[in-house]
Image (cartoon, rainbow, N blue to C red; front, side, top):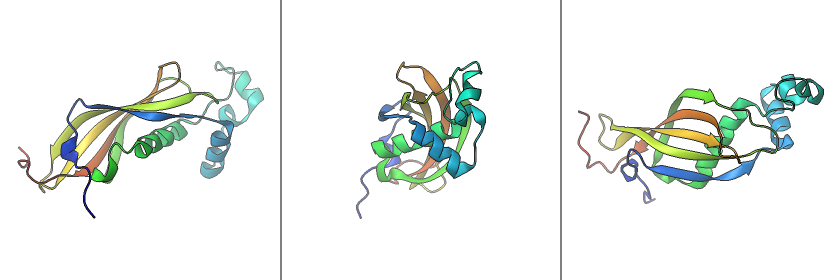
Length: 155
């Protein structure tokens, strides 16, 4: 199989946008069933209406999962990605309500070559936005990438 993309194809400061998805009640109910997170703010309409939000909210980890999925579906990283290494600095900036529509803006934040010149590590800043262009979640997503191998080693 021929490699289509490499980590070298991304430069610090590059920005990418994904498609969108509307967060439905089905997403919220299925997420609760998968995770066992039946917290009333997500599942109990009467309870949620009495909170400062006035309605049920989507689970924060669900929004994280949807963001990762939107980036994967977009093909930005394509076959350049070897492995996910972790996430840092995750913050929920605003609530996501049922029927909100979200998308992700990805910014290449940092990159480095490992001791193996054919592998590199990059951190991408994910900013999840709703249909009102409000940032609802941010996090740094760290991945290992295939490199062409013609980059200098670590400095």
